[in-house]
Amino acid sequence: MLGVVGALASSSFAGDKVDIPLPEEKPAYEWSKFALGISYVYQQQDYRLTGADFTLPVGVVLPPMFPLDERAVTDIENTADTMVLKFSYTPYPFVTFFAIGGRVDGTVDVSLVAPIGDVSVDYDGWVYGGGMTLSYAYKHYFASLTGSYTFASLDEAEIDTLVILPKVGVFNEKGALWVGAQYQRTEHTQAGNINLSLGGPSFPVSFNVDLEDQDNWNFLVGGRWNFTDDLSITAEVGFADRKQLLVYLEKTF
Image 1 (spheres, rainbow, N blue to C red):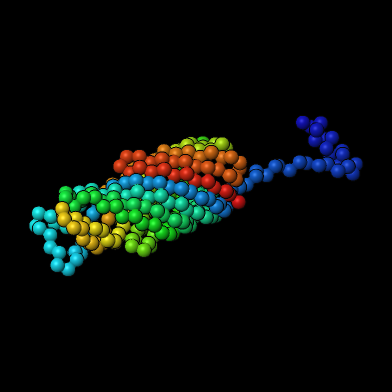
Image 2 (cartoon, one colour; image 1 turned 135 degrees about the horizontal axis):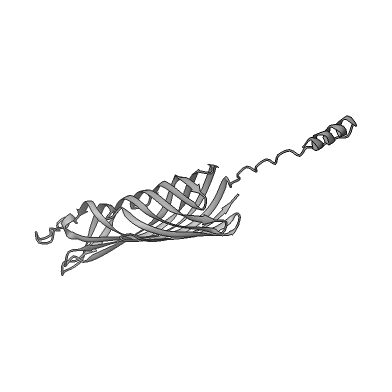
């Protein structure tokens, strides 16, 4: 040790430059702050009726055994296909804000007591919304919590939806796998006109009904595959009382 110190001292006194390597700086963690994606969502679930208003033509009176009100509805099923664009901003690795906009196309199938029969009402229009995701990762494990709110104002319908998604899973440079749950609270107001017949000539009936989810929770299983560092595809399925499928293609910047 003394010999090494002496050699350095002699070189210094002789005028030679001694280069002492600086410690390497640890590279800062980098993440993509912006992302743009497109998704398709299919969803099928049961609704429950929270309010109904039926208007019969002037002069038409139904017999008491055929009430046209909440008692006439036995089952309601909603099926919807949605295509949306999603823009997200991630200022920090643990938080992401996003905005979405797209198109929804759906059908509400209503089963009424006999002999009134079943009724199907189609709807379509634009949907908008946004939300936020909080996430935490440790080694190859992660947990996330996403909240979103969307609004659709259609010709004869209004749909407000609040969604909360807790998930846990594993990830690496190739992608990720997760399980989770989805809480969904939908407030759906639907208006329209139907033709009814009680064994004779049909007659028009206008209606305005308030609907919401029969069951708020379902379970999720999903995964993501990274084609490159900035291009990925996600697939997710939901099951239990609400059936759904999501496919999402995302490009990060």
